[in-house]
Length: 183
Image 1: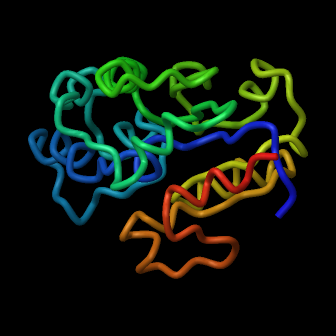
Image 2: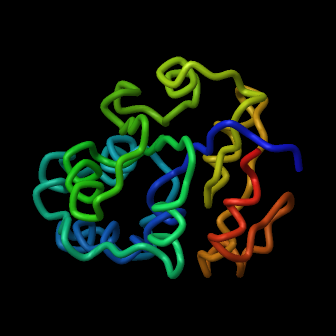
């Protein structure tokens, strides 16, 4: 794979192991576990499930999410990187601050009008083209983001959910493999 100028990450399920944290507010609001799915803009998922976005955000525990093994060490060594997430901005910003991570750009659901995220605004903010980046993610929605602009995509294979799904495409086994993508 050719070298890139920046990596653009999804947040939940890619850099941080957040499945349980994302599910708990839904459960507390009475949503059956089997109705909850991942990879959606939080406002769209709340609407689909018939609950208030504010109620969800108020119940989300910003202290429990942890990086996947090896991610924190890699983040400290990354070159240019950005975040493009469907997460609520309040919890996303709080988690970035708690983790001490400072991406060049961090865009959350509010930046996309509470609809599914897209990479165009990230590219504009960092002044790069699709050929200059690689999107790193854990869901079909992340793949769609990359396909929409024509950039390369790699799967966060350190997420057990990704590993179990055995997706098509480039799957990294360990976070330290991200460093090999830079030129």
